[in-house]
Length: 168
Image (tube, rainbow, N blue to C red):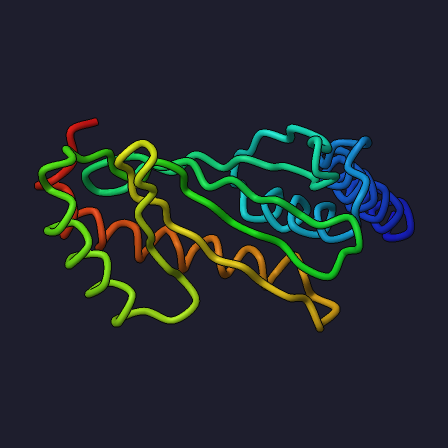
């Protein structure tokens, strides 16, 4: 009886591991992308896998609800598995007349935080939030996941600082 229960438990455990692995899209090409998606699956974070773009970056989107807004973090994993970029495009959109105030707020945020940076795109009067990471460790999925959470937390705070200028 113990052997039967042990066999059933092992079979159940193996099937659960297989289900988790199958959640990562089979078309995910780069190892850094696969590792990040595995980490998202383990943490039950929903994502959209967009495949390889025209720059040969593998693209993944994670939408997150913050305290007062929502964002979409877009991950661009490089073909050589050596780095990735994370962007929140159009974090806020602002009136051209608020440019100097937004610039001052963005500079203040950039002085407060490591890794995450904010910058203004003058072509459409928006603020972008960005992180770039170079991989030199084996646990790329965990590192990228931590950066995703770090960006989310900073964006949550930053939005309270920038929301007065948001016209979007």
